[in-house]
Amino acid sequence: MYDPVKDGLERSVDGVAYDEVTPPPGLAELVHCFWDLRTERVLDDDVTLHAMPDACVNVLLNQLEPSIAGITQLQTEYVTLPLGRSFHYAGIQFFPGVWRGDPDQTVDHYVGEDYEGDLPLVELGRATAGLTLAEKAPLLSAFVDRLLADGVVAPNPVTAAILTRLDEIQSVADMAEVAALSPRQLQRTLKATTGFSPHDLLKVLRIQQSFRRDYQLTFTDQSHFTHSFKRVTGYTPGAFAKTFEV
Image (cartoon, one colour):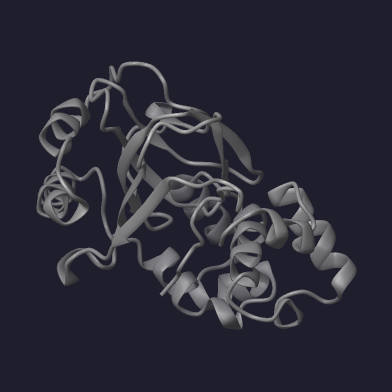
Protein backbone atom coordinates (compact mmCIF):
# COMPACT_ATOMS: atom_id res chain seq x y z
CA MET A 1 0.00 0.00 0.00
CA TYR A 2 1.00 3.62 -0.42
CA ASP A 3 3.71 4.65 2.05
CA PRO A 4 4.40 8.42 1.87
CA VAL A 5 7.60 9.72 3.43
CA LYS A 6 7.48 11.74 6.63
CA ASP A 7 7.92 15.49 6.45
CA GLY A 8 11.49 16.76 6.52
CA LEU A 9 13.46 17.88 9.54
CA GLU A 10 16.98 19.09 8.84
CA ARG A 11 19.67 16.55 9.70
CA SER A 12 21.33 19.11 11.96
CA VAL A 13 18.31 19.25 14.29
CA ASP A 14 18.82 17.35 17.53
CA GLY A 15 16.36 16.77 20.36
CA VAL A 16 13.24 16.07 18.25
CA ALA A 17 11.51 12.68 18.28
CA TYR A 18 9.10 11.31 15.67
CA ASP A 19 7.10 8.12 16.10
CA GLU A 20 4.32 6.48 14.16
CA VAL A 21 2.21 3.37 14.56
CA THR A 22 0.00 1.55 12.08
CA PRO A 23 -3.74 1.49 12.68
CA PRO A 24 -5.63 -1.68 13.61
CA PRO A 25 -6.54 -3.92 10.64
CA GLY A 26 -10.12 -2.68 10.52
CA LEU A 27 -8.93 0.85 9.73
CA ALA A 28 -6.03 -0.06 7.43
CA GLU A 29 -7.83 1.02 4.24
CA LEU A 30 -8.50 4.45 5.74
CA VAL A 31 -5.48 5.37 7.86
CA HIS A 32 -1.82 5.28 6.90
CA CYS A 33 -0.59 5.91 10.45
CA PHE A 34 -1.03 7.57 13.80
CA TRP A 35 1.95 9.85 14.45
CA ASP A 36 3.64 11.91 17.15
CA LEU A 37 6.24 14.69 16.76
CA ARG A 38 7.75 16.34 19.82
CA THR A 39 10.79 18.06 21.28
CA GLU A 40 12.65 16.16 24.00
CA ARG A 41 13.96 19.42 25.48
CA VAL A 42 13.77 23.12 24.75
CA LEU A 43 15.84 23.55 21.62
CA ASP A 44 18.57 26.14 21.14
CA ASP A 45 17.03 27.44 17.91
CA ASP A 46 13.65 27.57 16.24
CA VAL A 47 12.81 24.58 14.05
CA THR A 48 10.89 24.51 10.79
CA LEU A 49 9.23 21.48 9.25
CA HIS A 50 9.55 20.98 5.51
CA ALA A 51 6.08 19.58 4.80
CA MET A 52 5.82 17.54 1.61
CA PRO A 53 2.65 17.10 -0.45
CA ASP A 54 1.42 13.50 -0.40
CA ALA A 55 -2.34 13.90 -1.10
CA CYS A 56 -3.09 12.67 2.44
CA VAL A 57 -5.35 14.46 4.90
CA ASN A 58 -4.12 14.85 8.47
CA VAL A 59 -6.02 15.44 11.67
CA LEU A 60 -3.52 17.55 13.63
CA LEU A 61 -3.56 17.99 17.42
CA ASN A 62 -1.40 20.41 19.38
CA GLN A 63 -0.67 18.41 22.53
CA LEU A 64 0.71 21.40 24.45
CA GLU A 65 -2.31 23.59 23.65
CA PRO A 66 -5.23 21.23 22.92
CA SER A 67 -7.54 24.06 21.86
CA ILE A 68 -5.33 24.36 18.75
CA ALA A 69 -6.12 21.70 16.15
CA GLY A 70 -6.96 21.39 12.48
CA ILE A 71 -7.45 19.35 9.34
CA THR A 72 -4.55 19.76 6.90
CA GLN A 73 -3.81 18.80 3.32
CA LEU A 74 -1.09 20.13 1.04
CA GLN A 75 -1.60 20.43 -2.68
CA THR A 76 1.26 20.19 -5.18
CA GLU A 77 4.17 22.03 -3.53
CA TYR A 78 5.99 21.96 -0.20
CA VAL A 79 5.19 24.27 2.71
CA THR A 80 7.62 25.37 5.44
CA LEU A 81 5.96 25.25 8.86
CA PRO A 82 7.50 27.14 11.83
CA LEU A 83 7.42 24.93 14.93
CA GLY A 84 9.53 26.97 17.36
CA ARG A 85 11.82 25.62 20.09
CA SER A 86 9.34 23.51 22.06
CA PHE A 87 6.40 21.65 20.53
CA HIS A 88 4.37 18.47 20.66
CA TYR A 89 1.98 17.46 17.90
CA ALA A 90 0.09 14.26 17.24
CA GLY A 91 -2.24 13.23 14.48
CA ILE A 92 -3.94 10.83 12.14
CA GLN A 93 -2.80 10.54 8.53
CA PHE A 94 -5.59 9.42 6.21
CA PHE A 95 -4.94 7.91 2.79
CA PRO A 96 -5.80 10.05 -0.26
CA GLY A 97 -9.48 10.13 -1.11
CA VAL A 98 -11.02 8.80 2.10
CA TRP A 99 -11.75 12.17 3.76
CA ARG A 100 -15.32 13.31 3.10
CA GLY A 101 -15.46 16.21 5.56
CA ASP A 102 -16.13 19.83 4.73
CA PRO A 103 -13.31 20.90 2.37
CA ASP A 104 -13.61 24.48 3.64
CA GLN A 105 -12.31 23.28 7.03
CA THR A 106 -9.14 21.82 5.49
CA VAL A 107 -6.08 24.09 5.44
CA ASP A 108 -2.70 23.97 3.70
CA HIS A 109 -0.69 26.10 6.11
CA TYR A 110 0.59 26.33 9.67
CA VAL A 111 -2.13 25.67 12.24
CA GLY A 112 -1.80 28.09 15.17
CA GLU A 113 -5.35 29.16 15.94
CA ASP A 114 -8.02 27.65 18.18
CA TYR A 115 -10.11 25.09 16.32
CA GLU A 116 -13.63 26.32 15.61
CA GLY A 117 -14.89 23.59 13.29
CA ASP A 118 -17.61 21.01 13.79
CA LEU A 119 -15.48 18.02 14.78
CA PRO A 120 -14.54 17.21 18.41
CA LEU A 121 -10.83 17.79 17.83
CA VAL A 122 -10.32 19.85 20.98
CA GLU A 123 -11.81 17.10 23.11
CA LEU A 124 -9.59 14.55 21.38
CA GLY A 125 -6.55 16.75 21.95
CA ARG A 126 -7.31 17.05 25.64
CA ALA A 127 -7.88 13.30 25.98
CA THR A 128 -4.58 12.40 24.28
CA ALA A 129 -2.32 15.11 25.73
CA GLY A 130 0.27 13.65 28.09
CA LEU A 131 -0.09 10.09 26.76
CA THR A 132 2.48 8.07 24.86
CA LEU A 133 1.68 7.28 21.24
CA ALA A 134 0.86 3.68 22.20
CA GLU A 135 -1.60 5.02 24.76
CA LYS A 136 -3.08 7.51 22.29
CA ALA A 137 -3.64 4.88 19.58
CA PRO A 138 -6.88 3.37 20.99
CA LEU A 139 -8.37 6.86 21.41
CA LEU A 140 -7.36 7.81 17.88
CA SER A 141 -8.82 4.54 16.56
CA ALA A 142 -12.10 5.19 18.35
CA PHE A 143 -12.17 8.69 16.85
CA VAL A 144 -11.71 7.27 13.33
CA ASP A 145 -14.53 4.78 14.01
CA ARG A 146 -16.74 7.73 14.94
CA LEU A 147 -15.79 9.59 11.76
CA LEU A 148 -16.55 6.47 9.74
CA ALA A 149 -19.97 6.07 11.36
CA ASP A 150 -20.74 9.74 10.67
CA GLY A 151 -19.61 9.54 7.02
CA VAL A 152 -16.74 11.98 7.50
CA VAL A 153 -14.36 9.30 6.20
CA ALA A 154 -15.18 6.39 3.92
CA PRO A 155 -13.29 3.82 1.82
CA ASN A 156 -12.53 5.08 -1.67
CA PRO A 157 -12.23 2.23 -4.19
CA VAL A 158 -10.91 4.54 -6.92
CA THR A 159 -7.93 5.92 -5.01
CA ALA A 160 -7.37 2.52 -3.36
CA ALA A 161 -7.01 0.92 -6.80
CA ILE A 162 -4.61 3.68 -7.90
CA LEU A 163 -2.45 3.43 -4.77
CA THR A 164 -2.39 -0.37 -4.84
CA ARG A 165 -1.20 -0.48 -8.47
CA LEU A 166 0.89 2.68 -8.44
CA ASP A 167 3.94 0.93 -9.87
CA GLU A 168 1.97 0.24 -13.07
CA ILE A 169 0.94 3.86 -13.63
CA GLN A 170 2.98 6.08 -15.93
CA SER A 171 0.27 8.44 -17.17
CA VAL A 172 -3.22 9.75 -16.46
CA ALA A 173 -4.49 7.26 -19.07
CA ASP A 174 -2.92 4.44 -17.04
CA MET A 175 -4.54 5.86 -13.92
CA ALA A 176 -7.97 5.86 -15.56
CA GLU A 177 -7.48 2.27 -16.75
CA VAL A 178 -6.44 1.07 -13.29
CA ALA A 179 -9.48 2.83 -11.79
CA ALA A 180 -11.77 1.36 -14.49
CA LEU A 181 -13.05 4.84 -15.35
CA SER A 182 -13.03 7.04 -18.41
CA PRO A 183 -10.66 10.04 -18.23
CA ARG A 184 -13.65 12.35 -17.73
CA GLN A 185 -15.09 10.18 -14.94
CA LEU A 186 -11.66 10.04 -13.30
CA GLN A 187 -11.38 13.83 -13.42
CA ARG A 188 -14.76 14.29 -11.72
CA THR A 189 -14.21 11.55 -9.14
CA LEU A 190 -10.73 12.63 -8.05
CA LYS A 191 -11.65 16.29 -7.88
CA ALA A 192 -14.66 15.49 -5.71
CA THR A 193 -12.90 13.09 -3.33
CA THR A 194 -9.31 14.36 -3.19
CA GLY A 195 -9.40 17.97 -4.41
CA PHE A 196 -6.76 17.04 -7.02
CA SER A 197 -6.93 16.82 -10.77
CA PRO A 198 -5.61 13.49 -12.13
CA HIS A 199 -2.50 15.26 -13.43
CA ASP A 200 -1.71 16.93 -10.11
CA LEU A 201 -2.37 13.76 -8.12
CA LEU A 202 -0.08 11.79 -10.41
CA LYS A 203 2.65 14.43 -10.04
CA VAL A 204 2.55 14.20 -6.25
CA LEU A 205 2.36 10.40 -6.17
CA ARG A 206 5.29 10.02 -8.57
CA ILE A 207 7.54 12.20 -6.43
CA GLN A 208 6.54 10.25 -3.34
CA GLN A 209 7.20 7.04 -5.25
CA SER A 210 10.70 8.22 -6.18
CA PHE A 211 11.72 7.96 -2.50
CA ARG A 212 10.85 4.25 -2.51
CA ARG A 213 12.18 3.07 -5.89
CA ASP A 214 14.57 4.01 -8.68
CA TYR A 215 13.36 7.23 -10.31
CA GLN A 216 14.13 5.72 -13.73
CA LEU A 217 11.15 3.41 -13.25
CA THR A 218 8.87 6.42 -12.89
CA PHE A 219 10.38 9.27 -14.95
CA THR A 220 11.54 9.32 -18.54
CA ASP A 221 14.95 10.84 -17.78
CA GLN A 222 17.00 12.43 -15.00
CA SER A 223 16.34 15.99 -16.18
CA HIS A 224 12.57 15.45 -16.03
CA PHE A 225 12.88 13.86 -12.59
CA THR A 226 15.08 16.64 -11.19
CA HIS A 227 12.78 19.38 -12.51
CA SER A 228 9.65 17.71 -11.12
CA PHE A 229 11.30 16.90 -7.79
CA LYS A 230 12.51 20.47 -7.27
CA ARG A 231 9.14 21.94 -8.17
CA VAL A 232 7.36 19.79 -5.58
CA THR A 233 9.99 19.77 -2.79
CA GLY A 234 11.96 22.99 -3.37
CA TYR A 235 15.24 21.04 -3.60
CA THR A 236 17.13 18.96 -6.10
CA PRO A 237 17.18 15.27 -5.14
CA GLY A 238 20.81 15.47 -4.01
CA ALA A 239 20.33 18.63 -1.95
CA PHE A 240 17.21 17.18 -0.33
CA ALA A 241 19.04 14.00 0.71
CA LYS A 242 21.88 16.04 2.22
CA THR A 243 19.52 18.38 4.11
CA PHE A 244 16.75 16.16 5.45
CA GLU A 245 16.20 12.84 7.13
CA VAL A 246 13.77 10.74 5.08
